Length: 103
Length: 163
Image 1 (cartoon, rainbow over the protein chains, first blue to last red):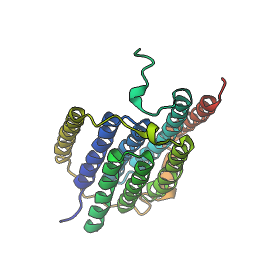
Image 2: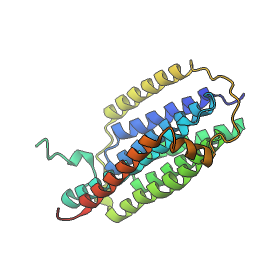
Image 3: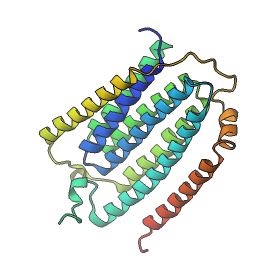
Image 4: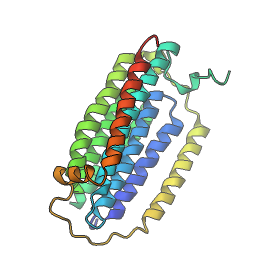
């Protein structure tokens, strides 16, 4: 197994990021798409914190991770509010059923 | 320590995969919590005390409670949860694109070299990060509070029945 290096954390971060990207691209359920975005943001946080651990004693990565979390909270709040509005008006959470702009 | 990393990494990936594959959004939300908590463990292994606490409190706590609360509030029944049958072509192409992109990212990350760095005593502590946040990052910190304020106002406006 060997020692865990910075690269291992970055590999994991890349894998998680693209699992999230797959969820956004493939799933049609708005709730799951929103949760996939959260996973992508978390994967990015992991690389920030991993880089901070291996850079010359600065903690800037931790502060950036904090900012990303605050943005994720705002995004989740607004996204869910929009989702509730959509559900109230259209009674659906499937992205494929939302064709108002296309028809 | 290495074995802990692999356990946490496997749990994080498993949670993510379950989230994108399970049909029911509620099961997906619980899988995402598994993923987020394992990531919190990884943050702890990276000596990021402050980020670890935030991850558990804010992410696995507040944000996921919000999402699960909304899922339960919508109270979706069987027909509303019904997804169109799996489009295999789209599944294959999306998976292929993501796999290639992930492979590329991993190749690039393979070239990153980490220097051996001595950690300071207060690395990642709440005090250290807090000092940094209120000195070097003061303006971004104020901007993020504005962003949160705008989000709160926006959510209240959106959730109102009549605007």
